[in-house]
Amino acid sequence: MYDVVIIGSGPAGYVAAIRASQLGLNTVCVEESSDSDGNSQLGGTCLNVGCIPSKALLDSSHRYSDAIKHFSDHGIEVNKPKLDIAKMMDRKSKIVNQLTLGVSGLFKANKVTQVLGHAKIIDSNHVEVSSKKGSEILETKNIVIATGSSPINIPVAEINHKDIVDSTGALEFKTVPKKLGIIGAGVIGLELGSVWSRLGSEVTILEAMDEFLPMADKKIAKDVFKEFNKQGLNINLGCKVTSALSNKKDVTVTYENNGNLKELMVDKLIVAVGRKPNTDNLLGENCGLSVDEKGCIPVNDYCETNVQNIWAVGDVVRGPMLAHKASEEGIMVVERIAGKHAEMPYELVPSVIYTHPEVAWVGQTEEDLSASGIEFKTGSFPFAASGRALASGESTGFIKVIADKKTDTILGVHAFGPSAADIVQQAVVAMEFGASAEDLGLTIFSHPTVSEALHEAALAVNGQAIHIGNRKK
Image 1 (tube, rainbow, N blue to C red):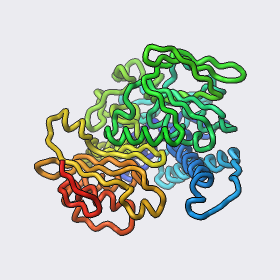
Image 2 (image 1 turned 180 degrees about the vertical axis):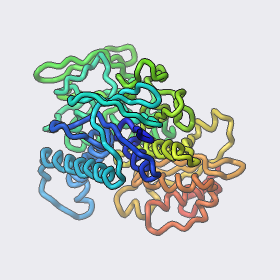
Image 3 (image 1 turned 90 degrees about the vertical axis):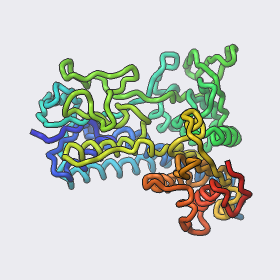
Image 4 (image 1 turned 45 degrees about the horizontal axis):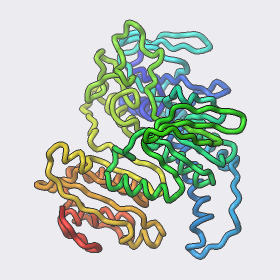
Protein backbone atom coordinates (compact mmCIF):
# COMPACT_ATOMS: atom_id res chain seq x y z
CA MET A 1 0.00 0.00 0.00
CA TYR A 2 1.19 3.49 -0.87
CA ASP A 3 1.06 6.37 1.58
CA VAL A 4 -0.07 8.70 -1.19
CA VAL A 5 -1.14 8.45 -4.82
CA ILE A 6 -0.76 11.72 -6.68
CA ILE A 7 -2.75 12.02 -9.90
CA GLY A 8 -1.03 14.33 -12.36
CA SER A 9 2.59 15.40 -12.81
CA GLY A 10 2.17 19.11 -13.48
CA PRO A 11 3.48 21.89 -11.21
CA ALA A 12 1.18 20.71 -8.42
CA GLY A 13 1.65 16.97 -8.87
CA TYR A 14 5.37 16.54 -9.43
CA VAL A 15 6.30 19.06 -6.71
CA ALA A 16 3.94 17.36 -4.26
CA ALA A 17 5.35 13.93 -5.15
CA ILE A 18 8.94 15.02 -4.55
CA ARG A 19 8.09 16.72 -1.25
CA ALA A 20 6.03 13.71 -0.12
CA SER A 21 8.95 11.38 -0.74
CA GLN A 22 11.31 13.76 1.09
CA LEU A 23 8.96 13.48 4.06
CA GLY A 24 9.31 9.70 4.03
CA LEU A 25 5.98 8.90 2.38
CA ASN A 26 5.80 5.96 -0.04
CA THR A 27 4.69 7.92 -3.11
CA VAL A 28 3.44 7.15 -6.59
CA CYS A 29 2.65 9.73 -9.27
CA VAL A 30 0.24 8.81 -12.06
CA GLU A 31 0.55 10.65 -15.37
CA GLU A 32 -1.85 10.13 -18.25
CA SER A 33 -0.20 12.00 -21.11
CA SER A 34 2.51 10.45 -23.24
CA ASP A 35 4.43 11.35 -26.38
CA SER A 36 4.39 9.52 -29.71
CA ASP A 37 6.77 6.92 -28.32
CA GLY A 38 4.54 6.18 -25.36
CA ASN A 39 6.78 7.94 -22.85
CA SER A 40 5.31 9.91 -19.99
CA GLN A 41 5.37 13.69 -20.48
CA LEU A 42 6.13 14.81 -16.96
CA GLY A 43 5.60 18.45 -16.05
CA GLY A 44 2.02 18.78 -17.23
CA THR A 45 0.72 21.69 -19.27
CA CYS A 46 3.15 24.16 -17.70
CA LEU A 47 6.36 22.48 -18.84
CA ASN A 48 5.11 20.93 -22.07
CA VAL A 49 2.64 23.30 -23.72
CA GLY A 50 2.16 26.25 -21.38
CA CYS A 51 4.37 28.39 -19.14
CA ILE A 52 7.78 27.27 -20.34
CA PRO A 53 7.36 27.06 -24.14
CA SER A 54 5.40 30.32 -24.21
CA LYS A 55 8.12 32.11 -22.24
CA ALA A 56 10.77 30.72 -24.59
CA LEU A 57 8.90 32.21 -27.55
CA LEU A 58 8.25 35.45 -25.70
CA ASP A 59 11.98 35.81 -25.10
CA SER A 60 12.95 34.91 -28.67
CA SER A 61 10.36 37.21 -30.22
CA HIS A 62 11.38 40.07 -27.94
CA ARG A 63 15.01 39.74 -29.04
CA TYR A 64 13.93 39.75 -32.69
CA SER A 65 11.76 42.81 -32.18
CA ASP A 66 14.56 44.59 -30.33
CA ALA A 67 16.97 43.90 -33.18
CA ILE A 68 14.56 45.50 -35.65
CA LYS A 69 13.27 48.42 -33.60
CA HIS A 70 15.67 49.31 -30.82
CA PHE A 71 19.27 48.23 -31.49
CA SER A 72 19.88 51.46 -33.42
CA ASP A 73 18.92 53.43 -30.29
CA HIS A 74 22.03 51.98 -28.68
CA GLY A 75 24.25 52.79 -31.63
CA ILE A 76 24.13 49.24 -32.93
CA GLU A 77 23.45 48.96 -36.64
CA VAL A 78 22.59 45.54 -38.03
CA ASN A 79 21.37 44.30 -41.37
CA LYS A 80 17.72 43.34 -41.47
CA PRO A 81 17.40 40.35 -39.12
CA LYS A 82 16.36 37.10 -40.74
CA LEU A 83 13.68 35.11 -38.95
CA ASP A 84 14.09 31.33 -38.72
CA ILE A 85 10.87 30.05 -37.17
CA ALA A 86 11.97 26.41 -37.35
CA LYS A 87 15.10 27.15 -35.32
CA MET A 88 13.12 29.24 -32.85
CA MET A 89 10.67 26.37 -32.33
CA ASP A 90 13.54 23.90 -32.02
CA ARG A 91 15.08 26.00 -29.25
CA LYS A 92 11.74 26.02 -27.44
CA SER A 93 11.42 22.23 -27.76
CA LYS A 94 14.94 21.65 -26.43
CA ILE A 95 14.19 23.75 -23.35
CA VAL A 96 10.97 21.82 -22.73
CA ASN A 97 12.72 18.49 -23.19
CA GLN A 98 15.50 19.47 -20.81
CA LEU A 99 13.04 20.40 -18.09
CA THR A 100 10.78 17.36 -18.47
CA LEU A 101 13.81 15.06 -18.32
CA GLY A 102 14.82 17.00 -15.24
CA VAL A 103 11.55 16.09 -13.54
CA SER A 104 12.09 12.44 -14.39
CA GLY A 105 15.56 12.65 -12.87
CA LEU A 106 14.19 14.26 -9.72
CA PHE A 107 11.63 11.46 -9.40
CA LYS A 108 14.37 8.87 -9.57
CA ALA A 109 16.58 10.75 -7.13
CA ASN A 110 13.72 11.05 -4.65
CA LYS A 111 12.43 7.50 -5.17
CA VAL A 112 9.03 8.54 -6.50
CA THR A 113 7.32 5.73 -8.38
CA GLN A 114 5.92 6.67 -11.80
CA VAL A 115 2.87 5.02 -13.32
CA LEU A 116 1.63 5.84 -16.82
CA GLY A 117 -2.10 5.71 -17.54
CA HIS A 118 -5.49 7.28 -16.88
CA ALA A 119 -6.42 7.37 -13.21
CA LYS A 120 -9.93 6.91 -11.88
CA ILE A 121 -10.74 7.20 -8.20
CA ILE A 122 -12.69 4.20 -6.95
CA ASP A 123 -12.84 5.26 -3.30
CA SER A 124 -10.64 6.99 -0.75
CA ASN A 125 -8.15 4.12 -0.76
CA HIS A 126 -8.18 2.82 -4.32
CA VAL A 127 -7.24 4.29 -7.71
CA GLU A 128 -7.66 2.41 -10.97
CA VAL A 129 -5.04 3.16 -13.63
CA SER A 130 -5.85 2.20 -17.22
CA SER A 131 -3.48 2.16 -20.17
CA LYS A 132 -2.92 0.26 -23.41
CA LYS A 133 -1.25 -2.43 -21.34
CA GLY A 134 -4.37 -2.97 -19.26
CA SER A 135 -5.43 -1.74 -15.85
CA GLU A 136 -4.26 -2.01 -12.27
CA ILE A 137 -5.57 -0.96 -8.87
CA LEU A 138 -3.36 1.15 -6.64
CA GLU A 139 -4.08 0.87 -2.92
CA THR A 140 -3.26 3.95 -0.91
CA LYS A 141 -3.83 5.79 2.34
CA ASN A 142 -4.23 9.17 0.65
CA ILE A 143 -5.09 10.54 -2.80
CA VAL A 144 -4.05 13.94 -4.14
CA ILE A 145 -5.84 15.11 -7.29
CA ALA A 146 -3.57 17.36 -9.36
CA THR A 147 -4.88 16.82 -12.88
CA GLY A 148 -4.62 20.44 -14.04
CA SER A 149 -6.70 22.10 -16.74
CA SER A 150 -7.23 22.32 -20.49
CA PRO A 151 -8.15 25.15 -22.89
CA ILE A 152 -11.86 25.92 -23.11
CA ASN A 153 -13.38 25.35 -26.53
CA ILE A 154 -16.37 27.39 -27.67
CA PRO A 155 -18.98 26.06 -30.14
CA VAL A 156 -18.93 29.22 -32.28
CA ALA A 157 -15.22 28.77 -33.00
CA GLU A 158 -14.48 25.05 -33.00
CA ILE A 159 -10.81 24.09 -32.91
CA ASN A 160 -9.67 22.35 -36.10
CA HIS A 161 -5.94 22.36 -35.20
CA LYS A 162 -5.13 23.97 -38.56
CA ASP A 163 -6.21 27.58 -38.81
CA ILE A 164 -8.41 27.68 -35.69
CA VAL A 165 -6.28 26.64 -32.74
CA ASP A 166 -6.10 26.78 -28.96
CA SER A 167 -3.14 28.03 -26.94
CA THR A 168 -1.24 24.80 -27.55
CA GLY A 169 -1.57 25.09 -31.31
CA ALA A 170 -0.55 28.75 -31.17
CA LEU A 171 2.88 27.65 -29.95
CA GLU A 172 3.43 25.47 -33.02
CA PHE A 173 2.88 27.72 -36.05
CA LYS A 174 5.32 26.86 -38.85
CA THR A 175 5.16 30.33 -40.38
CA VAL A 176 4.21 33.79 -39.16
CA PRO A 177 0.53 34.48 -39.94
CA LYS A 178 0.08 37.68 -41.91
CA LYS A 179 -3.17 38.38 -40.08
CA LEU A 180 -3.84 36.79 -36.70
CA GLY A 181 -7.07 36.89 -34.72
CA ILE A 182 -7.33 36.08 -31.02
CA ILE A 183 -10.52 35.53 -29.04
CA GLY A 184 -9.84 36.63 -25.48
CA ALA A 185 -7.73 39.49 -24.04
CA GLY A 186 -6.71 37.68 -20.88
CA VAL A 187 -3.20 36.64 -19.88
CA ILE A 188 -2.90 33.91 -22.51
CA GLY A 189 -4.31 36.02 -25.34
CA LEU A 190 -2.03 38.95 -24.55
CA GLU A 191 1.10 36.83 -24.27
CA LEU A 192 0.45 34.91 -27.48
CA GLY A 193 -0.56 38.09 -29.26
CA SER A 194 2.72 39.69 -28.18
CA VAL A 195 4.77 36.79 -29.54
CA TRP A 196 3.29 36.85 -33.03
CA SER A 197 2.95 40.62 -33.24
CA ARG A 198 6.69 40.98 -32.58
CA LEU A 199 7.40 38.43 -35.29
CA GLY A 200 5.35 40.37 -37.86
CA SER A 201 1.69 39.39 -37.56
CA GLU A 202 -1.09 41.95 -37.75
CA VAL A 203 -2.86 41.01 -34.53
CA THR A 204 -6.51 41.70 -33.68
CA ILE A 205 -7.84 40.66 -30.27
CA LEU A 206 -11.57 40.34 -29.64
CA GLU A 207 -12.61 40.48 -25.98
CA ALA A 208 -16.23 39.90 -24.92
CA MET A 209 -15.95 41.96 -21.73
CA ASP A 210 -16.25 45.73 -21.78
CA GLU A 211 -13.46 46.09 -19.23
CA PHE A 212 -9.80 45.34 -19.92
CA LEU A 213 -7.93 43.27 -17.31
CA PRO A 214 -10.63 43.68 -14.64
CA MET A 215 -8.51 41.83 -12.07
CA ALA A 216 -5.67 44.37 -12.28
CA ASP A 217 -5.26 47.86 -10.87
CA LYS A 218 -7.43 50.25 -12.92
CA LYS A 219 -4.67 52.74 -13.69
CA ILE A 220 -2.28 49.98 -14.70
CA ALA A 221 -4.94 48.33 -16.89
CA LYS A 222 -5.53 51.66 -18.63
CA ASP A 223 -1.82 52.20 -19.28
CA VAL A 224 -1.33 48.60 -20.41
CA PHE A 225 -4.20 48.88 -22.88
CA LYS A 226 -2.71 52.05 -24.34
CA GLU A 227 0.81 50.61 -24.56
CA PHE A 228 -0.23 47.31 -26.13
CA ASN A 229 -2.29 49.04 -28.80
CA LYS A 230 0.76 51.21 -29.47
CA GLN A 231 2.82 48.03 -29.89
CA GLY A 232 0.43 46.72 -32.52
CA LEU A 233 -2.04 44.64 -30.55
CA ASN A 234 -5.40 45.85 -31.84
CA ILE A 235 -7.51 45.12 -28.75
CA ASN A 236 -11.28 45.41 -29.19
CA LEU A 237 -13.54 45.25 -26.13
CA GLY A 238 -17.22 44.33 -25.95
CA CYS A 239 -16.96 41.96 -28.90
CA LYS A 240 -19.04 38.77 -28.78
CA VAL A 241 -17.95 36.27 -31.42
CA THR A 242 -20.93 34.58 -33.11
CA SER A 243 -19.11 32.40 -35.63
CA ALA A 244 -15.73 31.49 -37.08
CA LEU A 245 -15.79 29.85 -40.49
CA SER A 246 -12.68 28.30 -41.98
CA ASN A 247 -11.95 27.74 -45.65
CA LYS A 248 -8.79 26.92 -47.56
CA LYS A 249 -7.56 30.52 -47.59
CA ASP A 250 -8.58 32.17 -44.34
CA VAL A 251 -10.93 32.32 -41.36
CA THR A 252 -13.94 34.63 -41.29
CA VAL A 253 -14.82 35.70 -37.76
CA THR A 254 -18.22 37.28 -37.19
CA TYR A 255 -18.84 39.22 -34.00
CA GLU A 256 -21.23 41.67 -32.38
CA ASN A 257 -20.02 45.01 -31.10
CA ASN A 258 -22.30 47.78 -29.81
CA GLY A 259 -25.28 46.17 -31.52
CA ASN A 260 -23.51 45.96 -34.86
CA LEU A 261 -22.51 42.77 -36.66
CA LYS A 262 -18.92 42.87 -37.94
CA GLU A 263 -16.49 40.58 -39.74
CA LEU A 264 -12.78 39.96 -39.35
CA MET A 265 -10.71 38.06 -41.92
CA VAL A 266 -7.58 36.35 -40.57
CA ASP A 267 -5.12 33.67 -41.63
CA LYS A 268 -5.09 32.06 -38.18
CA LEU A 269 -7.44 32.30 -35.21
CA ILE A 270 -6.43 31.56 -31.62
CA VAL A 271 -9.16 30.74 -29.12
CA ALA A 272 -7.91 31.89 -25.70
CA VAL A 273 -11.04 32.25 -23.59
CA GLY A 274 -9.78 30.46 -20.50
CA ARG A 275 -9.22 26.98 -19.14
CA LYS A 276 -11.33 24.26 -17.53
CA PRO A 277 -10.43 21.69 -14.84
CA ASN A 278 -9.43 18.21 -16.03
CA THR A 279 -11.92 15.97 -14.27
CA ASP A 280 -13.34 13.90 -17.15
CA ASN A 281 -13.67 10.22 -16.22
CA LEU A 282 -11.70 10.88 -13.04
CA LEU A 283 -14.31 10.42 -10.34
CA GLY A 284 -15.82 6.97 -9.90
CA GLU A 285 -19.54 6.69 -9.18
CA ASN A 286 -19.02 5.68 -5.58
CA CYS A 287 -16.00 7.81 -4.66
CA GLY A 288 -18.16 10.46 -2.99
CA LEU A 289 -16.75 13.39 -4.95
CA SER A 290 -18.46 15.76 -7.36
CA VAL A 291 -17.66 19.01 -9.15
CA ASP A 292 -19.27 22.44 -8.91
CA GLU A 293 -20.80 24.53 -11.71
CA LYS A 294 -17.32 25.54 -12.93
CA GLY A 295 -16.07 21.97 -13.00
CA CYS A 296 -13.92 22.48 -9.90
CA ILE A 297 -13.67 20.03 -7.01
CA PRO A 298 -14.84 21.80 -3.82
CA VAL A 299 -12.18 21.98 -1.09
CA ASN A 300 -11.53 23.88 2.13
CA ASP A 301 -8.60 26.21 2.86
CA TYR A 302 -6.32 23.17 3.25
CA CYS A 303 -7.41 21.56 -0.04
CA GLU A 304 -9.33 18.80 1.73
CA THR A 305 -12.35 17.49 -0.17
CA ASN A 306 -15.53 16.27 1.47
CA VAL A 307 -14.10 12.73 1.44
CA GLN A 308 -11.52 12.00 4.11
CA ASN A 309 -8.02 11.29 2.77
CA ILE A 310 -8.79 12.72 -0.69
CA TRP A 311 -7.24 16.08 -1.48
CA ALA A 312 -7.34 18.29 -4.58
CA VAL A 313 -4.93 21.04 -5.64
CA GLY A 314 -4.04 23.37 -8.49
CA ASP A 315 -6.29 24.09 -11.45
CA VAL A 316 -8.99 21.63 -10.37
CA VAL A 317 -9.87 23.74 -7.31
CA ARG A 318 -10.95 27.33 -6.62
CA GLY A 319 -8.62 30.24 -7.11
CA PRO A 320 -6.38 31.45 -9.92
CA MET A 321 -5.00 28.85 -12.33
CA LEU A 322 -1.34 29.59 -11.66
CA ALA A 323 1.57 27.16 -11.57
CA HIS A 324 3.13 28.62 -8.43
CA LYS A 325 -0.18 28.54 -6.57
CA ALA A 326 -0.59 24.90 -7.60
CA SER A 327 2.92 23.95 -6.46
CA GLU A 328 2.51 25.52 -3.04
CA GLU A 329 -0.86 23.82 -2.56
CA GLY A 330 0.75 20.50 -3.41
CA ILE A 331 3.46 21.04 -0.82
CA MET A 332 0.94 22.15 1.81
CA VAL A 333 -1.17 19.04 1.30
CA VAL A 334 1.59 16.44 1.53
CA GLU A 335 3.05 18.17 4.58
CA ARG A 336 -0.34 17.96 6.26
CA ILE A 337 -0.57 14.30 5.24
CA ALA A 338 2.81 13.81 6.93
CA GLY A 339 1.45 15.35 10.12
CA LYS A 340 3.06 18.76 9.80
CA HIS A 341 1.37 22.13 10.23
CA ALA A 342 1.16 23.86 6.87
CA GLU A 343 -1.11 26.46 5.37
CA MET A 344 -1.36 28.61 2.26
CA PRO A 345 -1.35 32.45 2.31
CA TYR A 346 -3.78 32.82 -0.59
CA GLU A 347 -3.86 36.60 -0.24
CA LEU A 348 -0.17 36.65 -1.24
CA VAL A 349 -0.35 34.71 -4.50
CA PRO A 350 1.27 36.97 -7.13
CA SER A 351 -0.01 37.29 -10.69
CA VAL A 352 2.09 38.05 -13.76
CA ILE A 353 1.52 38.77 -17.45
CA TYR A 354 4.81 38.10 -19.25
CA THR A 355 4.41 40.68 -21.98
CA HIS A 356 6.91 43.47 -22.48
CA PRO A 357 6.74 45.49 -20.37
CA GLU A 358 5.59 42.96 -17.78
CA VAL A 359 2.47 43.37 -15.67
CA ALA A 360 2.43 41.99 -12.12
CA TRP A 361 0.58 42.42 -8.86
CA VAL A 362 0.00 40.94 -5.43
CA GLY A 363 -2.57 41.66 -2.75
CA GLN A 364 -5.53 43.96 -3.04
CA THR A 365 -6.40 46.77 -5.44
CA GLU A 366 -7.80 50.17 -4.55
CA GLU A 367 -11.17 48.96 -5.84
CA ASP A 368 -11.07 45.88 -3.56
CA LEU A 369 -10.30 47.99 -0.51
CA SER A 370 -12.89 50.66 -1.30
CA ALA A 371 -15.56 47.95 -1.68
CA SER A 372 -14.55 46.52 1.69
CA GLY A 373 -14.62 49.90 3.38
CA ILE A 374 -10.92 49.75 4.30
CA GLU A 375 -9.14 53.10 4.43
CA PHE A 376 -5.85 53.11 2.56
CA LYS A 377 -3.08 55.31 1.20
CA THR A 378 -0.99 54.88 -1.92
CA GLY A 379 2.38 55.78 -3.34
CA SER A 380 3.48 55.51 -6.96
CA PHE A 381 6.74 55.88 -8.81
CA PRO A 382 7.18 56.02 -12.61
CA PHE A 383 9.99 54.12 -14.32
CA ALA A 384 10.56 57.29 -16.35
CA ALA A 385 12.21 58.65 -13.18
CA SER A 386 14.40 55.56 -12.71
CA GLY A 387 18.01 55.99 -13.80
CA ARG A 388 18.47 52.27 -14.43
CA ALA A 389 15.26 52.02 -16.44
CA LEU A 390 16.26 55.00 -18.59
CA ALA A 391 19.75 53.58 -19.13
CA SER A 392 18.16 50.36 -20.36
CA GLY A 393 15.59 52.08 -22.55
CA GLU A 394 12.82 50.56 -20.42
CA SER A 395 11.07 53.56 -18.92
CA THR A 396 7.41 52.69 -19.60
CA GLY A 397 5.10 52.09 -16.65
CA PHE A 398 5.11 52.58 -12.89
CA ILE A 399 4.84 50.88 -9.50
CA LYS A 400 2.08 51.45 -6.97
CA VAL A 401 2.21 50.50 -3.29
CA ILE A 402 -1.03 50.44 -1.28
CA ALA A 403 -0.94 50.48 2.53
CA ASP A 404 -3.43 50.54 5.37
CA LYS A 405 -4.10 54.17 6.29
CA LYS A 406 -3.87 53.51 10.03
CA THR A 407 -1.27 50.76 10.42
CA ASP A 408 0.83 51.44 7.27
CA THR A 409 0.81 47.66 6.56
CA ILE A 410 1.33 46.93 2.87
CA LEU A 411 -1.92 45.64 1.37
CA GLY A 412 -1.06 45.49 -2.32
CA VAL A 413 1.69 46.16 -4.83
CA HIS A 414 1.04 46.65 -8.54
CA ALA A 415 3.59 47.07 -11.31
CA PHE A 416 3.76 47.67 -15.04
CA GLY A 417 7.24 47.95 -16.43
CA PRO A 418 10.68 46.34 -16.64
CA SER A 419 11.19 43.30 -14.39
CA ALA A 420 7.73 43.84 -12.89
CA ALA A 421 7.44 40.16 -11.94
CA ASP A 422 10.69 40.16 -9.99
CA ILE A 423 9.93 43.49 -8.33
CA VAL A 424 6.52 42.30 -7.17
CA GLN A 425 8.15 39.14 -5.85
CA GLN A 426 10.25 41.34 -3.56
CA ALA A 427 6.99 42.84 -2.33
CA VAL A 428 5.58 39.36 -1.69
CA VAL A 429 8.51 38.62 0.63
CA ALA A 430 7.95 41.89 2.49
CA MET A 431 4.22 41.27 2.81
CA GLU A 432 4.79 37.70 4.02
CA PHE A 433 6.57 39.19 7.03
CA GLY A 434 3.87 41.81 7.57
CA ALA A 435 6.01 44.73 6.45
CA SER A 436 4.77 48.30 6.45
CA ALA A 437 5.43 50.85 3.73
CA GLU A 438 7.84 52.48 6.18
CA ASP A 439 9.74 49.17 6.58
CA LEU A 440 10.18 48.94 2.82
CA GLY A 441 11.16 52.59 2.67
CA LEU A 442 13.88 51.98 5.28
CA THR A 443 15.29 49.03 3.33
CA ILE A 444 18.48 49.62 1.36
CA PHE A 445 18.11 49.01 -2.39
CA SER A 446 21.10 48.71 -4.72
CA HIS A 447 21.74 51.63 -7.06
CA PRO A 448 21.15 51.74 -9.92
CA THR A 449 18.44 49.08 -10.20
CA VAL A 450 14.86 49.12 -11.44
CA SER A 451 13.92 47.75 -7.99
CA GLU A 452 14.57 51.23 -6.60
CA ALA A 453 11.20 52.13 -8.08
CA LEU A 454 9.58 49.89 -5.44
CA HIS A 455 11.60 51.65 -2.75
CA GLU A 456 10.50 55.07 -3.98
CA ALA A 457 6.85 54.00 -4.28
CA ALA A 458 6.95 52.78 -0.68
CA LEU A 459 8.46 56.09 0.42
CA ALA A 460 5.80 57.94 -1.56
CA VAL A 461 3.06 56.25 0.50
CA ASN A 462 4.06 58.51 3.39
CA GLY A 463 5.10 61.50 1.32
CA GLN A 464 8.82 60.79 1.60
CA ALA A 465 9.85 59.91 -1.97
CA ILE A 466 13.15 61.48 -2.97
CA HIS A 467 13.07 61.49 -6.77
CA ILE A 468 9.50 62.64 -7.45
CA GLY A 469 7.10 65.18 -6.02
CA ASN A 470 5.16 63.73 -3.08
CA ARG A 471 1.42 63.63 -2.85
CA LYS A 472 -0.29 61.61 -0.15
CA LYS A 473 -3.54 59.83 -0.75
